[in-house]
Image (cartoon, rainbow, N blue to C red; front, side, top):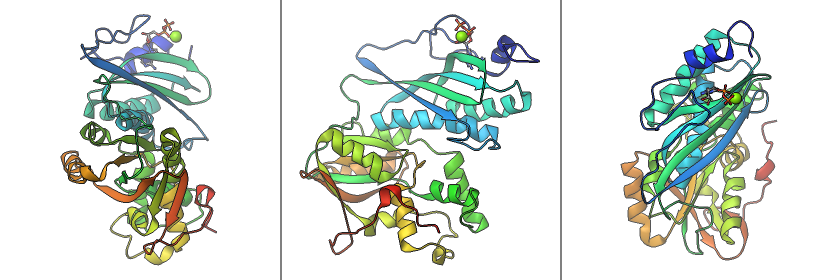
Length: 328
Ligand code: ADP
Ligand code: MG
């Protein structure tokens, strides 16, 4: 029960819309999802906690977007088509302006992906948002972390590191030119889940993961699940920090190490890291084009476990990028 407005009024006003694809949505004890013959459900949950995953004063419509985006990113990594989601919400109070903006951002992204809110839970407490998302894919076609083999290429979608730069700027540790900051902040607060790319990579990629905690850490999970290692060319990876048109102008702003640290271990990127056989290079580029999402080849898989960072000449690059702190 929330003060001023009943829990049920709140749900009805901000979180109930007519169902489109689900057999039953908000209002009963369970929602009912249709599943087609030959399809599997892909299910994932992600929780956002105030102070830990976002600042208390973040724009609520961006927060609504991000809460769903981080979940859709998991479906993207599996190559699943979004279907529906549930929303478990702890709110300190029923703040109608906040709820209106939050639900606007949430539903705007949901509508882009035809993913409908079918249920959830609402309670009073410290602000906490937990979404569970449901997607579907043909049986046996999920992109998993465990499918890569020695010799495969390693790719990353889009750009990496801007979200971390925005975070460092919001913490007051660096200053970015205004145009770059606005773009970087959008990457942090309103990430784009790479759903179309995940779908286009079905049957092409051998393994995939979404990058939420930084490239090296998340790629490490994929390597571990596949019991292989990788060699990454940092001279290719560093260009992934694309930022904004202001970037070239501001290039002197960051040390090489800090730039590389943002790319390799920045976090909150929600890009896909994936692998594919060398023979699939043309197919990967065609998938990227179809999904209107650029992809960059940054290295390859090797049978020896571990991640080896090298420069353009193949020489080892040292640095503790998994826990880098080069902004001082
Ligand atoms: P129950 O007591 O059976 O758990 P509730 O009274 O908590 O059900 O919720 C009533 C209905 O509203 C349920 O269908 C539930 O799924 C839905 N619901 C509750 N909170 C939310 C929310 N934040 N977003 C969408 N649906 C919600
Ligand atoms: Mg309940």
